[in-house]
Image (cartoon, rainbow, N blue to C red; front, top):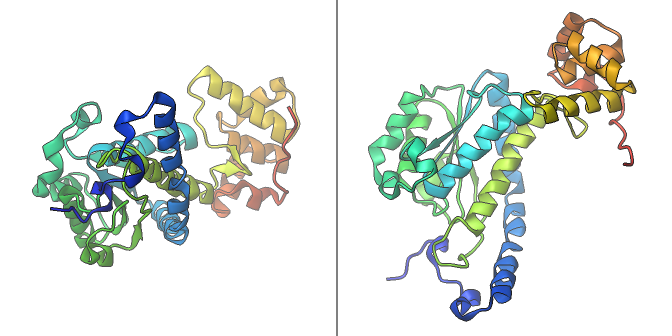
Length: 305
């Protein structure tokens, strides 16, 4: 019986890969991977819609949840876990949920995706409500756990979306607010969705959270200004950003960051507008958190190394 799912089809271009040399294997995989960005590009409008929904969610105090199983679940957890160090967000703001719980991050829990009732249960456990946005991730488009989670989230009034690399059932697509479907075609190794499907999923999730965070004002130009300086590397980066943007010495940047409570964003506004920390906080709040709406200046210049 032929499986109708794209991710379960056999790839004619790699049918003889078992006899290939190491270099030929690399070339075959690389050739398939080159197809991924084009598939993602076909979903540009849908991904942009997801960014809009995520931004609106965050501005009303809601949360973004990724729900998936296996590789899809791990990618959601990965994207969520990287938001706090990159953008200084509260860990509650973006959360990844994986079928089988934390043990599934390091050891496959293959049957977890089929326990339908757990999909709805986990949504209730996280107290999802009408302020939130829940995105299901299902490479095959048919994961029962993910479908149950989306249906429960929608019933609670949350916005919903799905990322899939094989067309989901039409009735599921009709029920979500946004469907992002980068169809990458059959995998190099049949059914191994950690490959092209995983890469496409990672690209889409990168765009959603990064795009929403940019819209929230967590960058100045393309500089990361809401980072949390939790190690020496990030302390140095904070200082260098203030030095570059404000044209000050490292000592002056350090003192400015101290007055700004270690906030790069506040330090920039304080220096450029000549205001106190409290005034800088108010200016940012009045302008959606976007520095350049406050400073009215062009993008920060890129200095040659």
